[in-house]
Length: 280
Image (cartoon, rainbow, N blue to C red; front, side, top):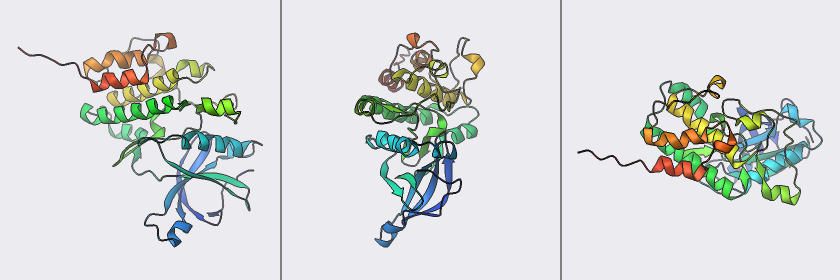
């Protein structure tokens, strides 16, 4: 199966593509109308629809890779993880795709541009907790996200949504022999958010996901992402982060994975429980 550079406007006789919402390392996401749901009287027929991008479309296992991402994310049921609907094939055009909820709001990379001085703690804390909740839940299900960064996190009226598990990994899928992404074929990680061991060719782990999340939180609290030159220097507490939250976040940002001695749930706990201060 393959995909054209410009896909047809109507897929599977049902989904009418409207516009591109975003592109990633593997795919392109469109806003689409579900015409069947419109006919059936559904009040909101809009969905997001993901196709493989041109780079991967000509691969002989392209549709399997897309299904692997769908199966990986569909297994997750959490308020702060994007909800997937169905995997389908347009047989006339030999195009595989999947549909998911249409998220409203902005990705955190756009939020960062609007907050050059960092996000105030009362606004940052709920976002941080929702992200870590989603990631901790995914890890409990044996799923690694693989590419935690602001562009893969949406924020809107209903809170935060973690999405794009295209570089992810599932222990259950591996055990079942389902196809996964060979990371020798794509180096799509953003250096500011990818753990150093990933950039060096290492494997995904809960610790690499933790590093990505911690880097996102650092960027939101500081107003800019960590520079590569900072990785080998002592880090300073970001301006909007309370001092009693900094020790746990600093550990999560350790460049040496052996020194990254907190887990996602422990970082979550550190951001929930502020040290009580006594004044005399």
